[in-house]
Length: 282
Image (tube, rainbow, N blue to C red; front, side):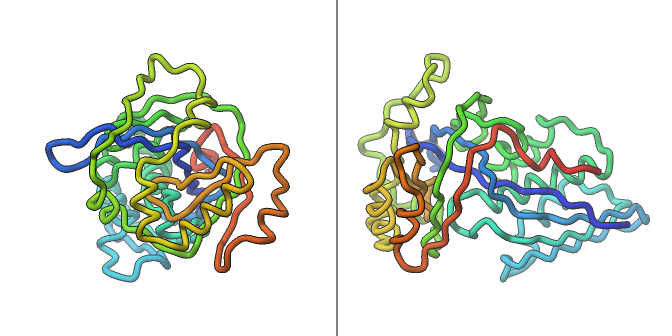
């Protein structure tokens, strides 16, 4: 059987508010997530041969493959009579806060559901996904969203098209470390999705509550963000390390790129209103 290619998209947190802390230590968040036209490629070969064998060639996994989210996703829903071989072409920077690992796991669930004709609903897939990672349910759904809780509360929204310059400073960030260092002193006021009508205003006025803690420990990210802010509204996505500049018509993007700090990987990107994983033709 030939390999079937699925795209696995990146996402941006257009803002990030920390509005509380749960009894289990996890933080309650609010954010707007948008898909962008930056994606990994996952190639699936599935055979119904009465054997259950999972093979994943993921260049970003340097420890046990049992820790790979793609492998874990397969374990959760691959029927016992199927063998699967997956090859990963990584384009989304690892550890850059762009959701690549979560997206890969979600795309794996979507692909197995389609290729094995399991007929699971998006809700069923999202329920599996949340047990693997908080961001995975967003990637299961097919719309940009207002996201709450630890990432499991998802309200689909419509956003105007946006352009971005996404910059990765070749620094990896530990999400666990950032949240472990974050002190919930001046928490953000909780936004009510039912009262929101102007998402542009929220995106333009809301920042990232984790920014001070990220910049305090990462001089390269601080230098990059300060540079981008010379040109317009720039933010850190999630816990970093990637930063993005919202591109307006008056911004000369080539001039921005010309003087980017050393060792910065950049992508000129645009928002998408859907998850390209569902575009794959079988």
